[in-house]
Image (cartoon, rainbow, N blue to C red):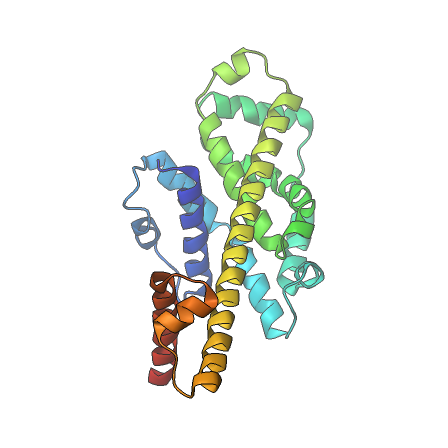
Length: 260
C-alpha cells in the first residue's frame, strides 16, 4: 500500500465526499479514488467496510450541524453537537464483549480471519472515543480526532491479520490492547501535528497579506502613486519572488470574486 499519512488523508477526503454527495456512491466509485494505490482485495474490502460505517463519516456532519446552528467550532460546541450526541447514543447501544471474548477475536485475527476486523473495530469505538477526548484541548473538533483514531486502528488491525507470530510469542491481552491504544494515540497525535502546522501556515499567510496591503496603502499615500513590486519588497523585507507570488494570489482571488 502507500504510506500511512497519504492513505489516511485520502480516506478523510473520500469520507467528506461521501458525506456531501447527494447520491449514494457505489463501491466502484469509492475504489476509483484509490486506483493509484497498490491494494489487494482484502485491503479494498477493509476500505469499503470502513466507509460503509456511518460512525466513520460523522465528523463533517457534526461540523455542518454546528455551522447551521450558528455555533463556533470550539470544544464545547463539538461535544454538544446533535450528531455527536447521536453518535454517543449509538455507542451506548453497542454489544459488549468481555476480555475472554475479545482475546478470542484477536486469536482469530492473528490466524488470518479478516472478517473479525469489523467486529474488533466496533469493540474499539468506545476506547477510541476515550483516547480522543484526551486530546480535545489541542484540537477543536473531537469528531475529527475520533475519525483519525478509527482509521489508525483499522490499519493496525489489518497489519495484525494473518500474523500468527503475534500470538505464538504469548502476547497477553494487555500487551495487545496497549499496542492498539498506542496506534490510535499515534494516529491522533500525527493528525494534530499536521492540523496545527496547517493553521500556522495559514496564520503566516494571512499576516503577510495584511502586511502587503498596509504597506501598499502607506506607500501610495506617501508617494501619490501605486507602489511597484520593488518598493513593496524593500518596505516589507520580502523577496520580489515571494511578493510577486503573493500579489498574484490576491489577484486570482479577486478575479474569482468578480466572476462570481
